[in-house]
Image 1 (cartoon, rainbow, N blue to C red):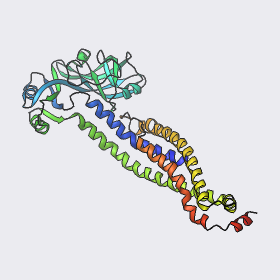
Image 2 (cartoon, rainbow, N blue to C red):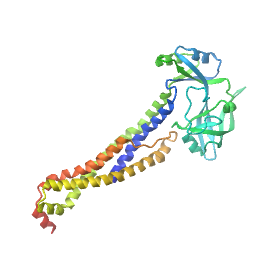
Image 3 (tube, rainbow, N blue to C red):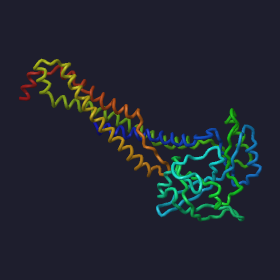
Image 4 (cartoon, rainbow, N blue to C red):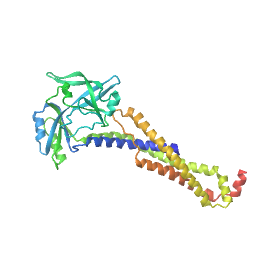
Length: 356
C-alpha cells in the first residue's frame, strides 16, 4: 500500500509542480504594473528616434521607458549560460525583478537557476561575452563583471544590468525595446494594435504572454503524466482489494473461530475493516513520505536535465494529499467488503476441520 501511495503521490506531485512553477513566473511578472506592454523594436534606435517618440505619445499611453535587451554568454570555471540581458534602472522603471539575494544594482542580476549553474553568488565575478556598440557597429567583447544579486524568475536566461554597470555595452542613448504603461481604463487590445502599427516595431507582448508560452510547453509533459498517474491510481485500488482478498483467505481459521464463538458476520467484517483503517493509515503515512521524496527526486533530479532552462518548484498540492489519504485509508478499509459474501457463506465446521 505504501509503495502504491508513494508512486501516486510522486506522480501527482510532479503534476502539481508544473502549475506551481507557472504561479512563480506569473507572480514575479506581475509584482508591479501588471498591465504594462513590452514593445520590441526591429533593432537599436536612438531614444530620440521617431519610433520611440511615437510609442511614448500614442493614445492610451500613460508613460514609457526605453530599454536595451542584448544576448550574452556568462562564463565561469563551472560552465556557461546563455543570457538575455536587459538594461534596467530599478529606480525609474514601472517594474523591476524581485531581489532574492544581493542587490539590484552594481552588477549582473541573475536568475537563481543561472547563478547555481555558474556556481556564483552575489559578490563573485564572471566573464560576460556580449556585443558592444561601437562607431563601426556591433562588435564582440569580453567583460569581467560582478554578480550583484539573484531574482526568482524560473526561466534561466533572464538577466538584468543597471545603466551604470552596462556602460561596457555602449548602449547609452539607445533602445531596443520600450516598456509602455497604459492609462487607467485603456483598452489594452486596441492599444497593443496601435503600438504594433508604429513603424520600426517588431513585436508587442504583455508580461503574461511568456507565462502562457511556458504553460503550453509544460502541458506536453502533464498530458502524459496524467495518464501515468491514473494508472497508478487504479494500481493502488487493485492492490488494496487484492490485499484484502489475500488477508481474508489466509485468516479463514481466525474468522471461523470468531464465528464459532458467536460473533456475527457483521462484527467480524467490521474488525477486518478497522484493521484496514490502521494498515491504510500506516501505509499512507509511509507513502506520503516516499511520494514527497520521489517528487523532489524527479523535479530536482530528472527535470533539470529534461528542462534545464526552467527552475521547477517541487510541490505536492493538498488535493494530491487528500486523494492519497482517501485512497490509502478508505480504500483499504472498504476493501474487506469484497469478501463479505465469502464470509457470509463460510462453512465454519468445514473450515476448522480443513485447517486441523
